[in-house]
Length: 116
Image (cartoon, rainbow, N blue to C red):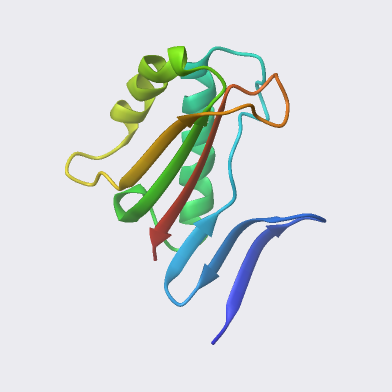
């Protein structure tokens, strides 16, 4: 039974693959912090696409998603980007909550689990 770690850092790996399942770390808009929630979500989803592809998966294979918003008032803006990105009929189990994120410049964080 192997465990494959991708983009390994000091504290975390950005992706871990085990037994045909891909686990991503929570993703934030590193390239454009401080932008609006829709823009941050679009940046995050592009990063998720890249990490999933590098792990032998894609967004049509999402199993579960957790989304944290600094402000629930950004729910509609985040969902506008999410709905445009997600292929029809492939919606994962999902939770979305309001939470204070590690840094105020980030207003959206998304973590996913996908089948390979």
